[in-house]
Image (cartoon, rainbow, N blue to C red; front, top):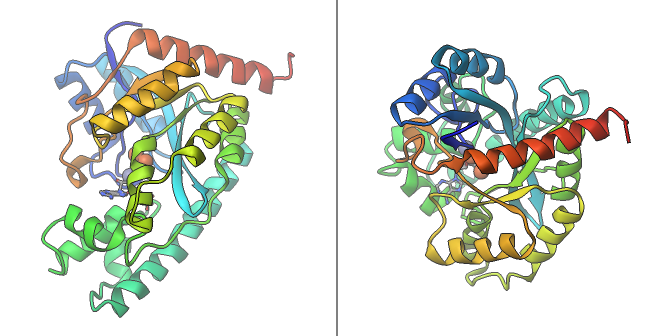
Length: 296
Ligand code: AMP
Ligand code: ZN
Ligand code: FE
Ligand code: FE
């Protein structure tokens, strides 16, 4: 493998606005050599993405961004080379999809109480059958004229700890990691600095940091491969801090765009990882699969 690979992109199979084929075409235009599709809590777009990447001569990494929960905050885990047919993972994705519907209704009830009503149908039609995410609700808030734009919807209502925020009942990160490893994946902690921003919002101050570090060390013991240090949502402080955390623990450092189509002002390939990093990630996935096959 060579060139640069964007390790975190979404499509209409979760809360992005583009098809997997669009993502592949944009990756080519952006000069990338490879692409991961990492939709939230679903593997449904992977077959389509694999075909599109093959058509374009792009390396493809089948991925997922699994929602987990830690002390009431969302923690996202990226699983690479995940087996889309793994039974335990599929069951958790089904459960999360259901959970997301309940949670969307709870968020809408909060918005209603805040005088910002949007209908469940409006949200569901924006999701178009994909697991319902906050960006779909944000879109409905914009369409209803309650907020000027998507970011405004998050800042005013939907951000972690915001007035209309509702947690997803999800696995603890350690359990999510084990689930992904069991499905043959190399696991990377997604955008840890974003979770921090959520904490700041809810508690009105920066988290001390010790919780996050303890969590990283727990995940490290469970076979974490890396940290998504270079993410567009990380400011200079978060970048430096999480780079330090990763370097100290000899964790891989990944860079990715977290592309969401029109839902965010970010291009595919705006951040990307080197082939060398991706090859080391692949070794982690090989180890997970070997372990799963019970050969050691
Ligand atoms: P959900 O999976 O429903 O909790 O939604 C998660 C998605 O919401 C993330 O992938 C981001 O796209 C978006 N998101 C979460 N927090 C924010 C924020 N503070 N500002 C903008 N987008 C956010
Ligand atoms: Zn998303
Ligand atoms: Fe995420
Ligand atoms: Fe994401």
